[in-house]
Length: 496
Image (cartoon, rainbow, N blue to C red):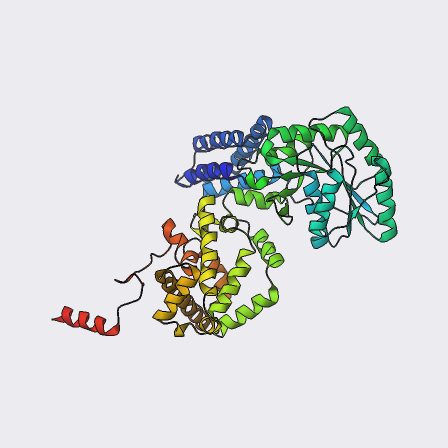
């Protein structure tokens, strides 16, 4: 998401950093590059022009070229304007005491309305303690209502069904009454879409809105259609009056022009973004956090929320206790890998970390897949060990390594590398604990993601990328160190 724009903006602002003192000419040149980057990201032409003009006015007002660190002032101004451009603050769905609160989901056919209805319902249940009921009034598209039932079953949200009618208004009234009688506080209406905007569709939406008086009318658009999504949102807003936008397929949109333009063009904010195919792959849209990601500042708050939502807190506390008491085994290491995998791909996590933590290293999709593959390979190696070997790694001798390598489809060298990195990690934990630095472990671990985690995972993936430790193979390819006797002979020969 926003990869193209992010790369160009970071390069432009990095060039400013190289100037000892900024002149108005430096700022003008940077603003021209920023304007071009926005246009290449498919941002609306008028929006891009207004953005650059606003940055210029504020930069001149701050007299950035007279400051001690003028480039930092420019970055701050660009960050503030980016956040403002996308809406300033996050716009949560605000509910009333009315029962039920109605949320209409509208949009063109094929934009992802039905799936988004399920995703948002699940998010509201898990994060805002709502009790949603779903209903589809798409009586025109074959199997549309059956599709919502499949989605509802997948996310664990009930769906109101009535085989006796194909009238949208009758379905809406029936769902509203059922929700009132059975205690559902939120009614999510999945409306019909068309391949193009037509008057018949708009009239139907206006009637449903007048009947249900929804607290939210959310327009769902495919982010990858860029300005077409913005134009469709504007037309829906003029006829129906939408209150927010849901952008799907943001994980596949490297430009981000729709997300950057919609608020300025139609005056309504982006409220959710779809970031994957899974039903939990939806996020509230935080303009300030997105601006941070674009400029390489990371998004630590979202990372923390991701960890809190997907990591077992009790298990994490137990792992911390074992670390501080030097009882951290390979079994615990495997459990940690399982927890880590719940957070998503490595490239996604690294984008949430500030550049100073990752050393500016970012992974391509191919590199991220390589790291994720190495995670699975490391788990396979540990899974091939017996319980005793995982609890007490020192008993793993040459014959055991051969068996483990054969059982996991790896090599003896990879088994040795995993054991070596595991021992190094244990030593680091002991040293940090003795020095009273263990409270900084999370920060150190985050800072080492780009260069050290690959080594901890067996040295395969990051080593191949050139950022991790190389595997030290012995003469026999096993990676074992020479015996003590051989080392003594070598030292003796050197002294002679």
